[in-house]
Image (cartoon, rainbow, N blue to C red):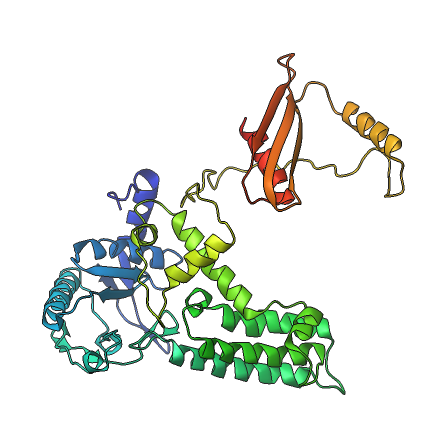
Length: 420
């Protein structure tokens, strides 16, 4: 913990929390003698998961192979054309893991440890590797599941889509019962049930779904179309687009593409040392006739919708501390007197001046505006700042972006004014 910068009272408190712990077992009315616990962390504590992650945080650094760790799930991989060499590299990494676990008194769950060969070659996919961890052989599987996503050797995600379809079908049965024409609930409730209970299954792993074949994606689209008819009461012959408009539910393909593009954008805004950002920056496209990759598809979507080229990294640790509380601004969206669309322009202008004059003179007055051509392109923003400490006004004007709507231009004007 000290290497990670955890010092002072926090370090001393956690040290005291873990030291001098005892355990006793109670059977009926009999309690055993207390025994000291010198290893492990308390079960059920809110800090236990975080402390365990800190404990194994240095494991990936000791592995000379590509790896990724999420909580206590570790995945290793290597690529190449020589299976014997790849087997040797994997066994070397597995030996390092075995030594690490033996040193720090950890145990690998060998029953859940498996390996898979990802390849487009049917011959290579049938090969068998001799891999061991903690003295036990690792079994091979053709369809491993990692973080809820079922993979296959060719990365078609066919089995994963079948799992999604099966799970959605079971949940649609509940929607079907509630959509009865005799006693069923209203459309609003059915829509909320679908978006919160059923569509959540579609949205999981949505960025990866853009790489699947059209046949597999259509499986999910048909399930949503079936749900839309339950929500809006449409017939089988009702066009899908009409059901989507009536239920106010967007097509799954739009959600998949947006999720892929936003995932790519989030990767690019990460820290420079983050492996996801390195992957996006070092990626080079490989043209294939049938297969595509997530990065290729996401970059095509980002280019279509003109994502920004200059980005600010998203900080992992917020600038505001947990003990600090920001003061919320007071918003006055109305003038001193109530007006409506029928109020004449001269009266609106007069009331606006009166509202501005009602503000205290010893505060900073800032007036912002932003707009774009036809509300979609060549946006610009500006502001006028009147400060009590100087007589001259501060004038700000700048372009926003080549592709920018009015909302983004207004937001850019406010941000530029606050940063001045």
